Length: 418
Ligand code: ATP
Ligand code: MG
Picture (tube, rainbow, N blue to C red):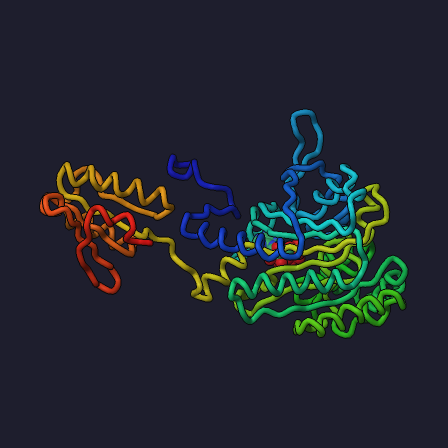
């Protein structure tokens, strides 16, 4: 290993530069504003949990638990996992702290890094970020509709277009066994041609076969029975009520009967937001109901629903949409000579107290090099101060993009940008 290689970042993680962080913050702020209007409040759960919390909730035969978890023993030999998703930790917190005693539904959002040991590629990382929401304590389909309309508003506020909403219902513990049997029947004469993973899924969790990304399995599952056809009356009514409410709110959607989602805890409503702009990694947000999860964690019966947005994919969509704004200083103060530099420092300090982004020149840079720096920073205005300006009591201003310029009294400069 050469010394230059020694300090590389791990595979599948990213350094995010300030210019990109600017976009991240815009997304985070938009999420916070939109979610707040729906009464969702931020909850910050830890990034590490005991491994069981994920294995039991996400399911032992899911991709995440089988292959993708960052699991390691801590110094006391406990098995620790870096969270691969945000729902299980939040439900753990909800149950542990008896949050179900508060008025229902309780509505939370979170944002932060998730960790999955995946093959890194475009739009797929080992440390990636999600913003997610969870609403616990109601099975009313109105809550499902609100959550989906909140997600639509979030994307609208970001100015993102061309997103597709797909919904499905995967039933409950009453109707799912019939569907599982129908799937087992369907695949029973195809087992040998399924991929090794799906052979195992056939044994333990045949629904997972519908989520497989292997071409052969995709072909083999054409004509497989659809979960919607197996819904019990309650689940069917719930789904129909949701579809009605989505239409009421003018949300266009497609029913995707194959969408089963990659985690075991889902029941009834599942949904995804997809785009055609990102190639293979086409899901930008996904979620669903998990009406049994709180009970599995030892809490009282508490139907719940949530979703998670893939940050990197939304960042990429914003970059592609050219709606990206580049942060730049409002003012650059170019000063020539010792007294001008002092004056510039005083003016800059006052502007900054008003929250205006100001840059100044350093260590006797020539006017030319200061102007060049102002240009590279894309400052809106340059103020120029030299000996002449100091003696006349006026300084020069220039607007860099429209090339207008003028003079202004030192005493009035503070109000110039108001
Ligand atoms: P996929 O089918 O793309 O693997 P998933 O079903 O594993 O997605 P979820 O667990 O539902 O994904 O996570 C919600 C969202 O988080 C996804 O829609 C996606 O935008 C994003 N996401 C998931 N895994 C990654 C990853 N490894 N890197 C970047 N974003 C991811
Ligand atoms: Mg995945």
